[in-house]
Image 1 (spheres, rainbow, N blue to C red):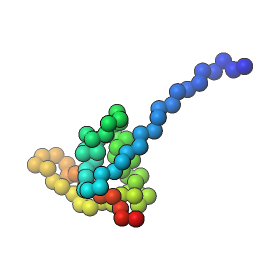
Image 2 (tube, rainbow, N blue to C red):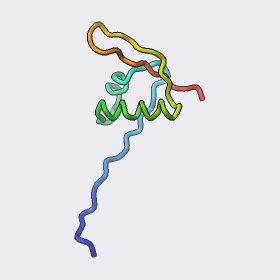
Image 3 (cartoon, helix red, strand yellow):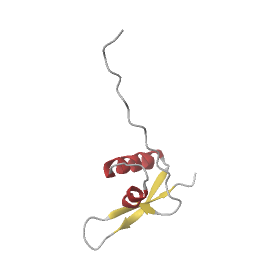
Length: 75
């Protein structure tokens, strides 16, 4: 018998990518699960490297850094 307590793990959050063009901020705001911005960016970067998403371009807001625009890959 072990005295070690079992660790509870967080459930993985699965993100359904929008069909039209989107930014990471839009995904973060639309996500019903509580997930951090960093986690959203991490999942987007992994999906881009897997070929699930592709980078369409960048939008320049009035102030601040440019936002990268993504879309779902056709394939």
